[in-house]
Image 1 (cartoon, protein in one colour):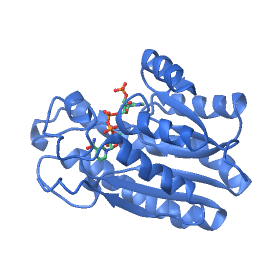
Image 2: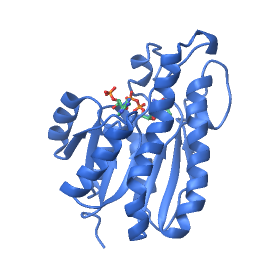
Image 3: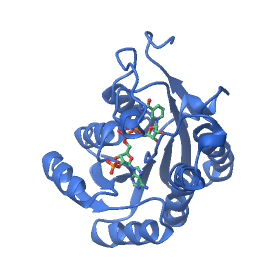
Image 4: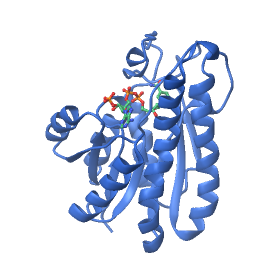
Length: 232
Ligand SMILES: NC(=O)c1ccc[n+]([C@@H]2O[C@H](COP(=O)([O-])OP(=O)(O)OC[C@H]3O[C@@H](n4cnc5c(N)ncnc54)[C@H](OP(=O)(O)O)[C@@H]3O)[C@@H](O)[C@H]2O)c1
């Protein structure tokens, strides 16, 4: 069966890995849906890539349930979900404000759970579907200055593994992708620019996402990759 009827929703797709993933999945033939929290960016990038776009703030439960049901009504059953939206936070824990902590947990952790909670029931009903969570190598080790970001992603590592065990036998693949440094604007947006000459590109990450989604005979489980130059 071809993939052109397979609707795949990508969150946080107005930049970096998400935008590259929409391009890669669209090129692979999927009916790819671009979503992002900024309506102007959604409009521009959806038009540029020739896909449908929806405004979606993953940190708001209502926004998640409403976009999932709108996509199912307007396009069709959602076969794939790429939970990619995320934000970076770096520094000593005691210096973070509570609103910064909440924003990271709401976006990276609850956002992934809200979207999954909204999309999963119809996947389970059909006995088929794919959920891919973009996690991070930050969920594989511990280091100073990333306590909240790492905590938000370690939670998703556990969530992903448990959900895989729960949903795999029911026909829904749940997988986690754990990239190292990627040359997106994530660090600049968080106000902590760094040398990204050593990083993977968003296209490198997107190609891995496409492979994990397209190779349906395997549940790729927890997959990590980093650039060979990224030993800093
Ligand atoms: N860059 C890295 O080194 C790296 C490494 C490992 C894992 N990751 C993970 O990869 C994912 C993508 O990051 P990236 O590097 O591509 O960063 P990015 O270029 O900053 O892109 C992040 C995307 O998420 C969107 N976003 C942020 N908050 C959102 C919300 N509440 N609702 C919906 N969308 C939201 C952003 O929207 P706006 O355009 O409106 O800001 C943007 O489209 C994240 O989960 C990140 O943690 C990144």
